[in-house]
Length: 75
Image (cartoon, rainbow, N blue to C red; front, side, top):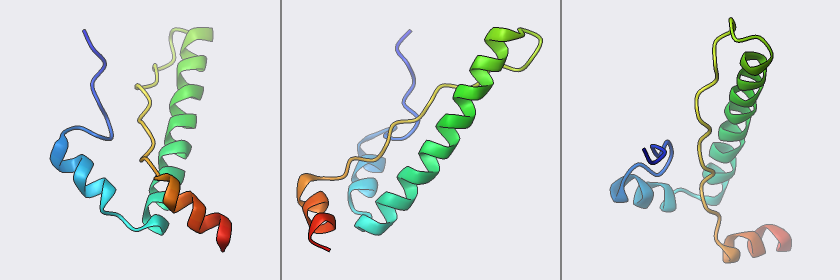
Protein backbone atom coordinates (compact mmCIF):
# COMPACT_ATOMS: atom_id res chain seq x y z
CA UNK A 1 0.00 0.00 0.00
CA UNK A 2 1.17 3.57 -0.59
CA UNK A 3 2.77 5.29 2.37
CA UNK A 4 0.31 7.40 4.36
CA UNK A 5 1.14 11.08 4.38
CA UNK A 6 1.96 12.43 7.82
CA UNK A 7 2.47 16.16 7.23
CA UNK A 8 0.64 17.18 4.04
CA UNK A 9 -2.42 14.96 4.58
CA UNK A 10 -4.77 16.82 2.25
CA UNK A 11 -5.08 20.02 0.21
CA UNK A 12 -6.60 21.97 3.10
CA UNK A 13 -3.71 21.15 5.43
CA UNK A 14 -1.17 21.80 2.66
CA UNK A 15 -2.69 25.25 2.19
CA UNK A 16 -2.54 25.95 5.91
CA UNK A 17 1.13 24.93 5.98
CA UNK A 18 1.90 27.20 3.00
CA UNK A 19 0.24 30.09 4.84
CA UNK A 20 2.56 29.82 7.85
CA UNK A 21 5.13 32.55 8.34
CA UNK A 22 8.72 31.70 7.46
CA UNK A 23 9.63 31.64 11.15
CA UNK A 24 6.77 29.22 11.87
CA UNK A 25 7.81 26.97 8.97
CA UNK A 26 11.40 26.83 10.23
CA UNK A 27 10.25 25.98 13.77
CA UNK A 28 7.80 23.39 12.47
CA UNK A 29 10.51 21.79 10.31
CA UNK A 30 12.90 21.71 13.26
CA UNK A 31 10.33 19.80 15.31
CA UNK A 32 9.68 17.42 12.40
CA UNK A 33 13.43 16.73 12.11
CA UNK A 34 13.74 16.06 15.86
CA UNK A 35 10.81 13.63 15.72
CA UNK A 36 12.08 11.98 12.52
CA UNK A 37 15.48 11.41 14.12
CA UNK A 38 13.79 9.80 17.12
CA UNK A 39 11.78 7.55 14.79
CA UNK A 40 14.93 6.56 12.86
CA UNK A 41 16.71 5.64 16.11
CA UNK A 42 13.70 3.55 17.17
CA UNK A 43 13.69 1.74 13.81
CA UNK A 44 17.42 1.04 14.14
CA UNK A 45 16.99 -0.21 17.70
CA UNK A 46 14.18 -2.49 16.50
CA UNK A 47 16.32 -3.78 13.61
CA UNK A 48 19.13 -4.58 16.05
CA UNK A 49 16.77 -6.06 18.64
CA UNK A 50 13.27 -6.99 17.38
CA UNK A 51 11.98 -7.11 20.96
CA UNK A 52 12.19 -3.29 21.00
CA UNK A 53 9.32 -1.24 19.61
CA UNK A 54 9.63 -0.28 15.94
CA UNK A 55 9.63 3.40 14.96
CA UNK A 56 6.81 4.92 12.97
CA UNK A 57 7.32 6.31 9.45
CA UNK A 58 8.96 9.71 9.15
CA UNK A 59 7.11 12.92 8.26
CA UNK A 60 7.89 15.26 5.35
CA UNK A 61 9.29 18.71 5.96
CA UNK A 62 7.23 21.77 5.12
CA UNK A 63 8.29 23.35 1.83
CA UNK A 64 10.13 26.63 2.14
CA UNK A 65 9.92 28.51 -1.16
CA UNK A 66 13.01 29.90 -2.91
CA UNK A 67 11.89 33.48 -2.24
CA UNK A 68 11.72 32.64 1.47
CA UNK A 69 15.26 31.20 1.41
CA UNK A 70 16.41 34.37 -0.32
CA UNK A 71 14.94 36.48 2.49
CA UNK A 72 16.91 34.40 5.01
CA UNK A 73 20.13 34.87 3.03
CA UNK A 74 19.60 38.65 2.92
CA UNK A 75 19.04 38.86 6.69
